[in-house]
Image (cartoon, rainbow, N blue to C red; front, side):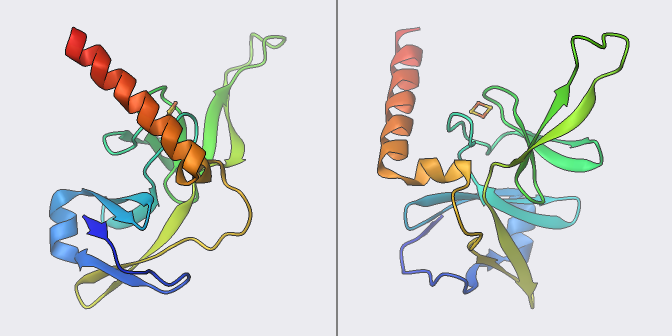
Length: 163
Ligand code: FES
């Protein structure tokens, strides 16, 4: 799905029918040059940048797990965990000096930009995030980030063509 027309910052725009988006469960949408992922999981819609903040992996097919009372998507590429609600990166930490203590979940802070989803009369609308400042997943919206991503994807395509 692609949204070519200009999307006004802070204004909701129509993504599609709720019924269709529930059926597909995961929808990839390109708005301008930003690739977004809309997920319907257990009755709730979530939207976030589709390229993982770590190295641009696609979150489209990431597993969803509840970790430390946070619903997270697990990036298929290197298994980073990202909160669906707010884009926090979380990790399971162990202190090598306290080997007898069990690992515990810690936050790296907000790493992935999440967007707002609203529902009105069976239709789903998206409002792009206006959180100011740099969020790491923004990198893949930059010219250099997109070029890096393309290079990576070309390498993977060449690798699989050779095998
Ligand atoms: S690209 Fe997502 S964990 Fe590395």
